[in-house]
Structures are given as C-alpha cells and as structure tokens.
Length: 537
Image 1 (cartoon, rainbow, N blue to C red):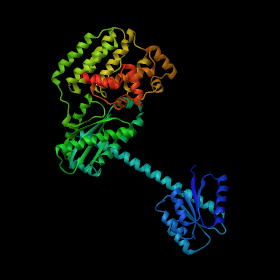
Image 2 (tube, rainbow, N blue to C red):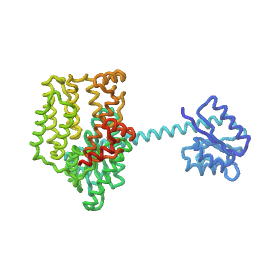
Image 3 (spheres, rainbow, N blue to C red):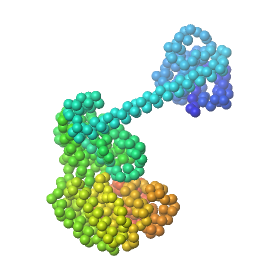
Image 4 (cartoon, rainbow, N blue to C red):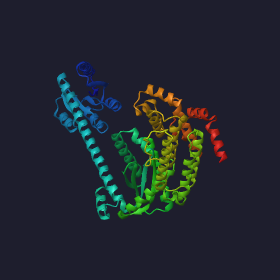
C-alpha cells in the first residue's frame, strides 16, 4: 500500500489544529495519508513544499502576501505531480473560476469544515495519482516493447546485410525507415567481442544473457553519440557489430585516433556499468550501402587477432598481427615433440616448463587462428589417446573448447587437463572434483565462492570442501589462491603489470592481500619478482 505525504497551509491557528487532529484520527483507520508538514502563509507554504515535495497540498485561499491559488500556480511547474486541494471560507465565483483554471483537484468550503468532504478529496487525489502512475507504467512498458522490437528488427537487418543477402537499393530504403541514413556518409565498421564468453554462459541464465546483451547494445549506442552518428546490433554468440559514421572526410591519422579513443571508451563503459569485458576491432573507412559487406569482412578479419591478444584490447587495421603461416610445419613438429616427450611420471614443474616453451614458440611464430585452433584440437586428442593408453583417464574426455578461448587459454586448458589425469600418478579424480577444477580454471579471474563451486558440481558445500581437500591435499581457498598467483606469474611473463592491474586480472580486490599471497607462494614480493623477470629480459 502506497503512502501519500501531505502538507497543510493556512494562516488560521484553529484551522491548522483542526486539520492536524483530522490527520491523527485518519491515521488510525487509513494508513495511506501521512501529514509531514504545515505552514502559516503562502510564502512559507512555498518553502515547505519545495523542501518536502509532498504528494498532496491542502491550502487556504485568502492569506497575506501570497494567496493559496497564486502559491499553487507558482508550485505547479516545479511540483507537477503534486495534487492540490483548496480550503476557503468564501463561496466566491471568482475563486472557483481561478481554481478551475489552475486545475485544482478539489475546492472545499471550510466553514463548517466537514471531515467527509476532506476524506473524499484525499481519496480523489490518491486515485488520481494512482491512475497517473498506472498510465506512466503502461507508457514505459510500451516504450520498452517498441525499443526491444526495434533492436530485434535491427539485428535481423544487420545480420542479413553483412551476409550480402540485402541488395543496396533495398538496404537504403529500409535504412531510411530505420533512421540509418549514416551509411550514405563515411563510416567504419567495428566488432565488439565479449571476453570469457564460456564463463558468461555458465554464470547467467538464457534470460539474463539476453537482458545483458540488450544492455551492451544500449551502452555502445550511447557511446557512439559522443563520436558521431552510428548504430550497434547483436550478431551471433559473443559478437556485436557497430558502425561509426561522420559527415566529412578524415585523414588516416584522425580516423585512427577516433577509432582508438572510441574503442577504449566502449571497453571502459561496459566494464564500469555492466562488469563485462570486451575487445573491439575496427575496419577501414567506407561509404555507401554497397560497401557494408566489405567493411564487415575487414572488421571480422581484425577480430581474429584477439586470439593472441590480452582481454580488453582495441585493434585497427594499422595494428594487425603479422602472421607466419609458412611456419605451420615447424609448429606441428613442436607439438609432436611434446607428445613424444610426455611420460607417465612427469611432474607439474616439468609439465609447466614444456608448456611455457610451446607458448613462447607459438607466440614468436604466430599462425592464423583458423590454422592453429584445429591444430591444438588435434594435439589435445593426441594427448587424450596417450592418457587412455595409460589407463589414467576416463574413456569420455571433455570436448576441446575451440570456439571462445584465446590461444593462451587453450594451452592452459590442455596443461590443466594433463595435470588432472596424472596427479600423483593416480587415477583420475572423482568426477565432481574434476568438474570443480575446470570450473575454477574457467572462472579464475572472478571472485569465486565455495557455494558457487559446490552448486556447480551439485554437492553440499561442507561435503564438497572435505572431499576436495581429501582428494587434492589442499583446501579449496588455498587451491584457488595458488592458481590466481600462478596466473599472475604467467601475466608478468608477458609484460610489466602494475599491482592494481594484476589484482584486476586475477580477481583479487585487496592489493595488500594479493601481495601477501604472492610472497607466500613465491617467497618474494611482486615488486621484487617484476624487477627480477624484467631485469633478465
């Protein structure tokens, strides 16, 4: 039940006292109306009304300096949702006429003051506000429905457009109806790719995923406004497409600066407002509907470079990765050497060293994702076959995550997979522990809780914690902290991160706690480690 706040304004003490008593008695039988203030003149009534912003104001007409109707006429523009009830001792046509013109809710004769009339006036004011709220909610729902429908239509149109299924003349005609005329000017196509999409799908329900993607489009659209015309839309899975347009010709340097600046702003806004991490890829400038498919193809080509980059990256055509696809056979030999080398009693340190060597070799000799990803999938299958021959893994191994992981994430997945199967030369852990480890690895950058992990494997938290420690010889929290520090060590191998950046990347909020953990597991502080590793480099 909603409460309606009320303010009374009258220059007669007896009337004010009578109204206060009325509200006290009313509160016993009707909790909706709450008296929050009173004033003895029109000027004081103005001040109190603007301070309290009441739902209902009951005011006398005839008062010194500022009469009630004049006070209401001044308040209405500032408090448009407030309802006004007039009290008067004079049954004057002039006052009644002014009250009608001011759209006063009710006009009550206060001599004698009848409580039934006051109750009817308050009920009428409450009903009026409730009806206004209902209409506002209906209008809001209608606006949301229209907006959602607009985005659905835009999504279908953009998907057909980039696939080349819409002829330029039809696209131009539809674009005018959708207010997308900017394609006739200069524009750049860009693609925003959600980082950690597997985690996103595991963390949110299908309904919440749709809501968040809808919010992503809204934020990209709002960011575009600061840089020119344009629009954004959802594509498939973890990709969003957008177009940034401008009316005049820009130099290459100016275009590069605008794209980099806007891309970083999109990354920052999505992290700040939705806690979603994305990377953004830009194609070159184009003009006209007939170039849309080419513009998209360029941006999609740049987007493939995210496979070798860190999260929250902005890439343009000027900063493409130089690929060495002619080194394919050398890379294949490197993977084959690893398979020949891998033995049943390998230690974690030996495995990490060999996987780090593969990572460095592949980073120095990059080949395109379309070649490398299937190569790593076959590498994973070869490892699975070898582990099965040793009877140290189940016959049904998990499918290799080819689509949404970066190169480094795939290597970490393979390394963790081998470790799980060869841990202390035992048989594979219980299925629940294996699933928990993989869940932790995929969500390592988040603030993981015991409850969330236990829910994922369908076990009670207490039992899961006991089972995990018994199997792994290490508590859940200690395991997660160790893996976070190991991840930070991997990151420091690639570049000189600040402590704050490392905390953000590994999902530890407190910098002091991170430094304490780091020293606990490595024996030195992060600062000492950074000096050591980058001094050697």
